[in-house]
Amino acid sequence: QVQLVESGGGSVQPGGSLRLSCTTSGFTFNSYAMNWYRRAPGKERELVAYISTSGGTTNYPNSVKGRFTISRDNAKNTVYLQMNSLKPEDTAVYYCNRPVAFSGGYWGQGTQVTVSS
Image 1 (cartoon, rainbow, N blue to C red):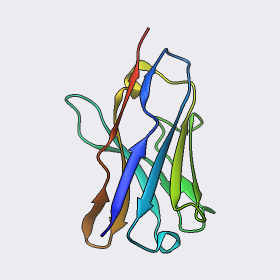
Image 2: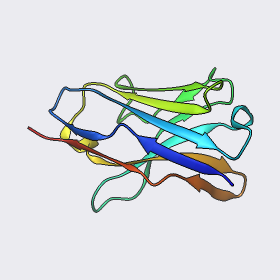
Image 3: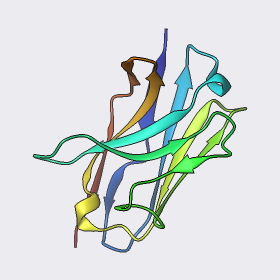
């Protein structure tokens, strides 16, 4: 059974940093690309980072490019999201996602990130 578990969220001041982790099980981790999404209050879910199976390709929207870095450790079946220079608008629940062709894929329970003074 596919399982994704996020951790590392918390409360931080603007300009601060957090590193999120997503531990996975139940599938061949290095056979799948992985995503991080977020959902802020009153807004639609937004893709914030993508990483290919090998980690050789990453993609970010302009809203986080240059501040967020996605990485993976295939030996640990874990994907990370390093978030620097955090802004109040980054406040959201962050979700790990394993995409599936022609469907939304699998999701973790989410971890709350709050950026405030």
